[in-house]
Image (cartoon, rainbow, N blue to C red; front, side, top):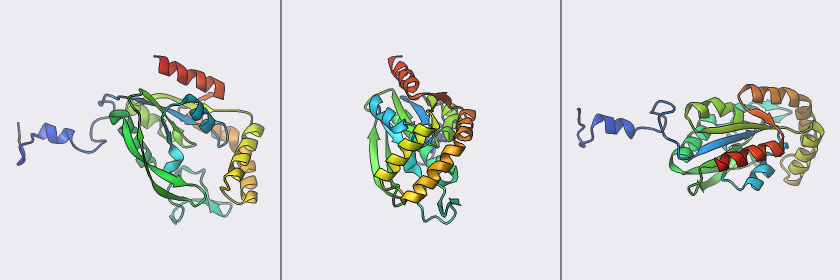
Length: 222
């Protein structure tokens, strides 16, 4: 067996390499993730609060708004486009949480479109956590390959309700100018059926909020 200058054999050195060096599925996950997606305003955040589980907000992995390569729409950055999102960093954080039970996560300020710091999340021994955001379906297959996926859910409710709850939230948080929020909201409402079809096509199950709550609770009882 070959031994390096520091006395470490090659097998040990390989095992100490980067997070994704091992073939997918070969690490034993200490915890698994429920990916929670759906249209903005569909009730994802309120559901996670009721469940009381550790939560990763995937929106915190947005790229900073001054990046000139970001796609634009309506005169502003198109934050509904996954090209605005750091997929690799999000996956790295979920794998780290699943394998070690803790990770440092970015904190993103939506009104100013930039990261403002980091926060530390610990699972405290829990076998399940939630990662929620409109881009969660983008990583369903990657999480399955890493053997850290517990379930992938797409929250759905009638479009009129989604539009209203989204608008009230965004106005209350002053996320963008009011007319921009109304215009964006109407466009999202028109495109919502296609969006849900896309999310389910990527592996998320279409469920209502009460169904999602029931299914996550069932996972905890296993």
